[in-house]
Length: 352
Image (cartoon, rainbow, N blue to C red; front, side, top):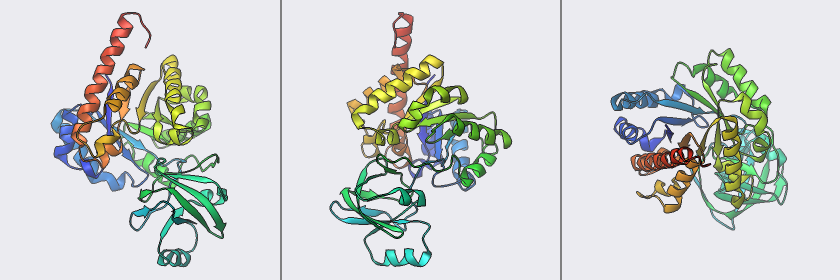
């Protein structure tokens, strides 16, 4: 049976909506801990578990760790970045007085991690929010960077940041990750998603932390989000329980037209090793604002499952989208069709 995951967020933060999502085929949910902790999510999780109980479902709960993923800092309010204008990116560790001075000057002032600031140079391209926005560095001075906005849009705090062609290596786990692992069993977590897995050592470090905190039985999911993770896949598979092909940042690390082949290669490696894998990101992106998906989206879901995926996951579609119940209905129904097709292929002796 295919696992159908939504993502918890404001759009589905009610018992009635979550119950309908379970009744429409949802088997579990992802909680993104880039913005919040398990303890801070206690009320949301109570609603989640109550809804599952009323729907007669024993739910899965995956927590998505902070890990080595790079994100901008918190913003006082969302920023509209307009093409042709200049944004100021500043080291989030600079002094409070300097930060206040920057913000008083108006314009787009964006806090970024120190390791990103140190890696930036003039002429480099920066992707924000899973590649939706594109900036090009035009100047760099003490603690701040000027960048021309090449592809604009609305930017909220704690969105992803990627410097194209530059390898940046933050630690495997943050202090917040360690705290959430300590609380995982108490909050009913069934699996840990480790972002941006770069090496076998990343997974071994997380497994040790899980065991030390009495959570060694939880499923460890390695998120493959860049070429580095893909190159190490053969060594990663023996030390994780599952793989998530996370197409958002993976698509930022290559030309978009290379992404389908990357997904196929990872899926084939997982099938060959008998490893469970799931696929996430933009499976029903149009449904954030529309009640019906595109034909391309349902084909994507069907083919993902036909290729052997044991789970499919939506993110913003249920977290902030307008139609979270409809999203799950289309996701689950299409995944079931893909599973039927896969079963028929196997029965007829054909390959996937």
